[in-house]
Image (tube, rainbow, N blue to C red; front, side, top):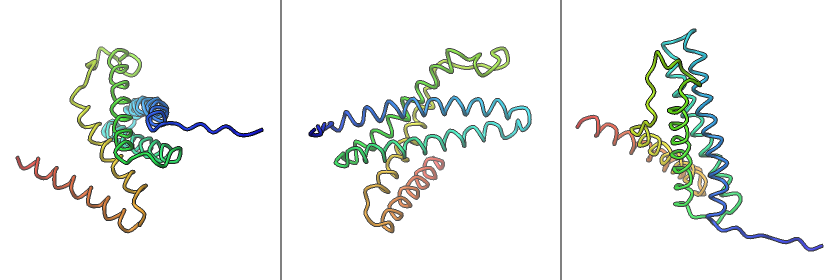
Length: 171
């Protein structure tokens, strides 16, 4: 029996990868909240910092895996589409996380002691910037053939971010 090969378009691969990754990332963002709640009594000073570290680690993990898997499925996807994929995953997962956290605050917190806003729009700029930078570095590491030049380009991206942060802090 002859095997039938199905060719997927770039956007089909990106959409399938994005849906799975968004669900996984949103679940990891919620699990970071539960980690913070569990650590709030033993080490209240560092509970929020550990949650932020867990969130950034989860974003790095999911975005990198999504970009690598989309590239494995279809190697001819352009780099800008992969960067768009990573950024969109982070922004949509953060949106889902914010909406659910805002409408169901009793899941995590006691609402009498804390105020949870339904939409935290100021965080979307942060999440989109983190998603863009992680996507850019993942695409650089994936598409640049030489390990040396990929490291150089990634370090240039990090240096550019440091210079940008420094320049914005001086304003």
